[in-house]
Image (cartoon, rainbow, N blue to C red; front, side, top):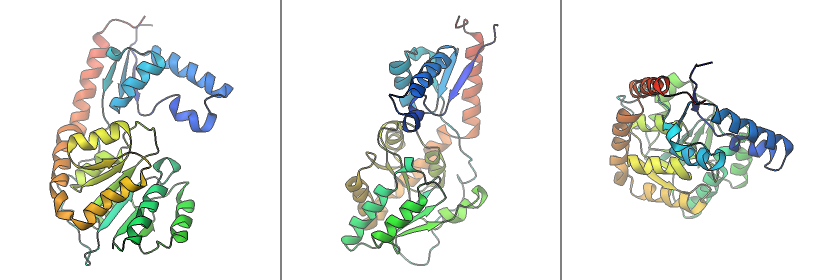
Length: 277
């Protein structure tokens, strides 16, 4: 038929299946062939991370002209909220909020916390959420005797997250090595006006640097994470502009209106182009 097909790519195939299937398995071979077939038969592909464009081009041979960058949006409910910290004490509070899965590699954050504790620094890292890796991480915190430094909390509904952000000075986002996705929490974090510390490779790191809303090191870099947190603990005023920059960047790139305008434009272009056949 003559219907046009626009694919919105939130994650990468077959890369997203490597951990489960293994690169050499029969299932992975079929998964890769199906992925290539699916991508090839799209008229346009929108991606949430700029790094996806190189991946799809290099792995599946998709022409770069067929792809467009369309980042996810986030709610602007926090954009103009007063989220100035309300804790009574002056202990620096870092926050990680979201899925606590293996892919987040929060064990490296815990290892970094251990280094900072050994230096005699005072701080808290609050981890809010649930996930498959949470029991292992809780055990690791106990093993390192970090219960006063790394504190786990139950998930909080999205409409109550403002209360959580108000107890935080800075935000943490992490991924496992080699991931080129941009976690959707980065957009939400920017809306809070808090500085962001990321341990990620690829597009996530590039986004934080481009927005000038925080600092980044490579994924799974314990000393890199410790270095970022150490500098904030010792000199928090240095990072005040980062939070403001995050909100400015969010307002320009990640609101629902911006997303819908770009999506409408992309759909129009897809409908008007010649068929992929």
